[in-house]
Image 1: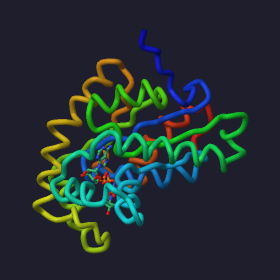
Image 2: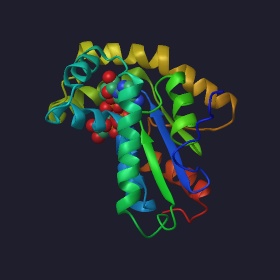
Image 3: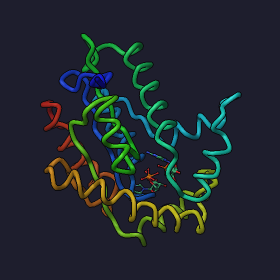
Amino acid sequence: MPTAVSPVFDSTKVTVIYVLGGPGAGKGTQCSKLVEAYSLCHLSVGDLLREEQNRDGTPYGELIRTCFREGTIVPMEVTLKLLQNAMSAEMKIRSGNGWTDGRGRFLIDGFPRTMDRALKFDEEVCLPSMVIFFTTTEEVMLQRLLERAKISGREDDNMESIMKRFHTHGNQTMPVIQHYRSCGEVTEIDSTASVEEVYREASAAVSKLLHTPVA
Ligand code: ADP
Ligand code: AMP
């Protein structure tokens, strides 16, 4: 008989907040601010993949490079492993506010980008407590990404890759957001406004979830 797999982390102790939104919607910017205020650990799947791509001896370097260039989604065995390892490492070294007695709190940025990954993470890693979805227009995202390109050094911040990333987001990640919407688990925030205004809404949502004063 198949044995049921239980998630590595208990969601009554480990809070996982998924942060979604199109490329350039402002996910990373808001996560950096939330981390400071709420003792959260920010795990950007894009950043974990960039680190992995540069790690000596990785078997995934070429695969990740191709996915970045084409704006496609990296296979789930790679992303799930990277996330789980990063969460375990953080749980070992953190202590204090929100991190005592096996507790932890994570902002997982840019994940899950497809429904099968969402279900696999639920089953094997941890059930999420909330989804924050930053939404704005493709025009705004494009402008921001082209501006970011001047300093980011990211290979995928170019017009061709950006268009492919928009396409992937619309086709593959929007159904994930629709799914969480239908379960009433999404806090949707219009990220067209200034960084400070968007943060006001994001921090209100996180405070409510963590039962702490707005910071
Ligand atoms: P994402 O992580 O969603 O790809 P980033 O947080 O990296 O997006 O933001 C993309 C670019 O837009 C960055 O250069 C950032 O400084 C800028 N940016 C983010 N949020 C805002 C905002 N609310 N208003 C103006 N620019 C923003
Ligand atoms: P980002 O840094 O979030 O803009 O992501 C850059 C690229 O990393 C994407 O275009 C994908 O190729 C890959 N990527 C990011 N997040 C994920 C994810 N959750 N699953 C698979 N691939 C991802």
